Length: 560
Image (cartoon, rainbow, N blue to C red):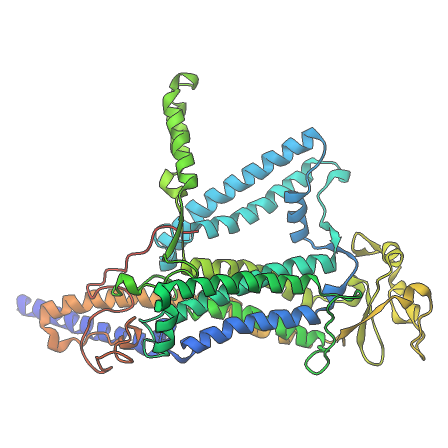
């Protein structure tokens, strides 16, 4: 009786096990397929190209409409200004110079160690099991972000040790309009890199959407042995960046400069400008989610090498640099040659503290080269979103016309020096920066020669709180991006587990009682969409993880 009871319990557990595995497979199929499937509509090649171009268009439109870009006061940006001055403006005294060098060195070393060992390896790779950070992928990006944080901590320590006159401030020593041109040039470069990389990857694709524009893809990839693609990419890249930067630097309100004064699509209020900035943040992150390799960003393992997507403007799929690796190897060789010059055991301790020389072999693949600069520009976009939300004309040497609600900016340097202390409005001088103090309320005529130089901008200001609602799309995408990455990564892990469970179950009870996971839409080669196997087929060849035995797809070497 006991043996029959144990057999019955075993049979029940086996039945529950099979039901649970099939239920999880259906749950994965119905709820999470759109996260990793490259064949959803918003991952169509045209959709990907449209979104990256939309970022560029919205970015240039906002640059023309943002009144902060026409401000003549000194740029005073807490946080960003502190880091700028701490890294670029060095003291003249020898003692302060040594202190600054020491803190900067410690901050960079500490940020690199924490980012490499704790954030990347232990948190993102080993604890959360993020496939995009498999092995050493993305280490340099994480290290750079952590170095920015430790750099700011070093700045705070520096300000604690020095006198009041030597404290690093947030005043940057340049006008806001000059800083705006600098950041816009960085944004334009990152936008054009994303446009070129995404467009080139789409035109090379013969795996995910093979039936879309096959003739055009063949000309792009194969004409003249591939040199047409390389030459066109470099011409567009160099010419586009040169033209865009020239246009940004030649823009402004001075005579002979390009001036944006269109009021059919321009003349935006602070709510519309915030919505525009929110749309840019949304598209920045949505571009990453649109990638066909999301969230691992790895080349499919079942694709022949001659069909791998190459980096734009090159004939390789990865950029590599071993200069730092060779330098570290030579330093290690020097430590071994002169052991007598060092205390006993010091050479081995130094070798233990320094990472393996292979760590310094920098490898960058197409995905990290595309989205790495875009994620850094995202930080600038978030800072710009904060500026739009907190915008007040008084803080930027500007005032508002009562009737038309147009913004006027003060150009006169004497007025700005009297009213502002390094970009901060002095207390009690708010009345100097007002329409009543600058112009006649009835006729609009200037009340002084200094007021006559004031410039009317295209933008408007209402002073309402609708701008906080306008920032919703970008904030939703920002806070939802990390759950999206986690859910997509979880789906891949569950598919791995389900493949193993299905194989084990079929070996025990037979294949007729266990249905394989239907993930045809996730096939890199498009089985069930463009391929030869229908969706309802039980054929299993290769899913979005690797082989059917559940082994994950191998990742490329570590990148930056």
